[in-house]
Image (tube, rainbow, N blue to C red; front, top):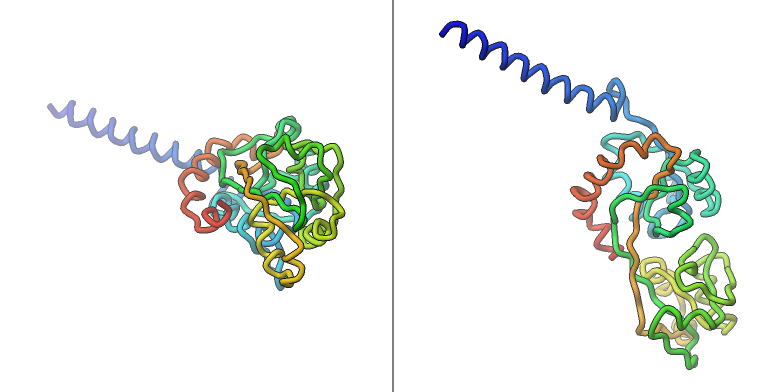
Length: 250
């Protein structure tokens, strides 16, 4: 019986040791001797998604990103133009871009997390326009406009496309009938639209047709972060969906 007791004690000690070792190496692989792994995050300034105010990085995507990564990684955030951010992701200089829509081109150099939000889009035209959109393909033969850094036009593939500086410029561009149609995510559209004068608003028409796309974290295939996808997706599913910011994007 004493032998059984000794065997049980040894088994218990081995189990505790095994459990501690597993926990240690898990934390070691994520944090490395207790220090958070640095990762480079890039994003353009798209208020209210991501922007800098009084030297402080703010925005819905910044909040979502912090909820997932700040516990395990040290975030080194760079505000870059959209093309440079994507080029950095492709080269591996940038580890991650938050709140990005998946596309075949991007999947060549990036791994996408589980979805973090549904992003809805609105169709905008000038007030007396006869245009009626019932499906995305209706946009292809129209004069479309977008703002620099946006790539949603790849979804509807317009024959004619003009790019302007930003969303406020895009609204004015459509109001002046310089283009037939613009497609803008609702959350990027609402603030600039609300800042227009009543006269400017009267020159615009929001169409009834809308659609939505999933937004993701895009991680460079050349980044060491790509080895932590199971952890990232676990955190996305456990924490991101609880944030008020995500409900705002939806």
